[in-house]
Length: 311
Image (tube, rainbow, N blue to C red; front, side, top):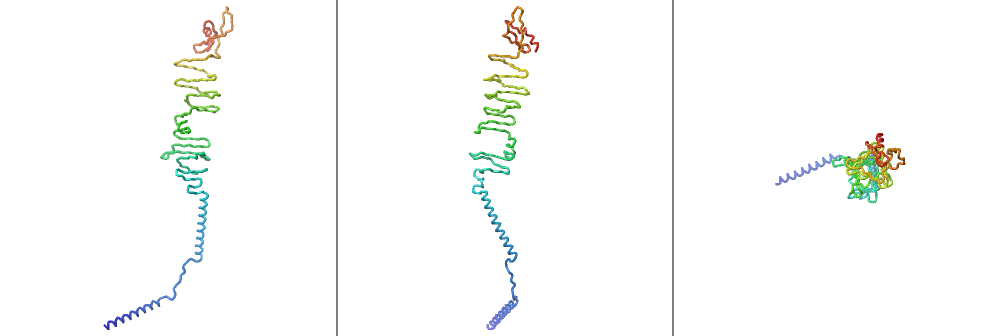
């Protein structure tokens, strides 16, 4: 036991000596002076950093000032921007608005107390398209004309119920009670006109004229030409023909005058005294020519038949 305790004490001494020697060797290997490295920006790098920070600050201030100026000028608010107000049922614009690109809307409506004006330096064009994007209708208001391209054009009354005017490729229909033409030259129709009544104003004459062709009036139940408060004059450069295929021609008037008819001269016999002729009878040639012959107790047309040879 004494021997083992002596070995432990010696072992402990050897271990302490080794620790002291190791500590001394480490202390001897440590350098005498450590190197010192400065941390941070110095010189021109520091100046560049401060310059960029100052430039960023100035840019932020300018952007903030421009943002405030734009908000003030454009009058931004919760409801919209300036004259533009956003509503639940659409957009409301106050004053004059200018659009540089096409405008696509379902409805354009003005206020109740103001007019809706669409203006352009060249023309105003309204287009209607179907679901496939194809053009179905177009209205162009230009400096020289107003053009409408559609399958059917309709004009209705102010209440929207009564149809006043309609036009398509085949016909034009006017349902108004009166159609008035106030031009000095009247109205010119290139083709037929169907109407129940053609009437002039109370203080003006009615004139139906076809300068180079014939004038034809037809009706399934008859044509009536009347002048209620004045004379009715029918004249022509050439023949005037009255024809009735299944009826009669009736001249109903107090006085019927046939002017510029050939007048036959009746020569009295030797034992008769000549006197002034005041009464004549109307004679008709086989060709239809009418002439006058002096009236006597019997017909004198046969005596004046030589007039028919002149026709």
